[in-house]
Image (tube, rainbow, N blue to C red):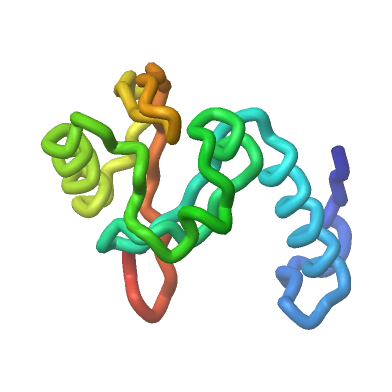
Length: 126
């Protein structure tokens, strides 16, 4: 854990040009990649943008098999997936929603799903 007291010093936020930004970005990437949890990002139309090692362990697909493609794990819950997606597109964050998804080998796995939209200044929700 790292903490810095900025109350006595400059209140200026870090910028992307500062070395600390890249260190934090690399640290965050390492945390995500080493997580036992599946951490996946996807576009609004359902194409996978990122897929960590936890997702590979849980679902059986490698990142190379899924990045750029639609989410393969939905299985028989296409309607449920659509309803959850619509809630997120309305700006709702979901925490601990229990769903069933399909692994690459065809077996079903029960998961606790947390989903939140990502926002940026230029384009809104992602």
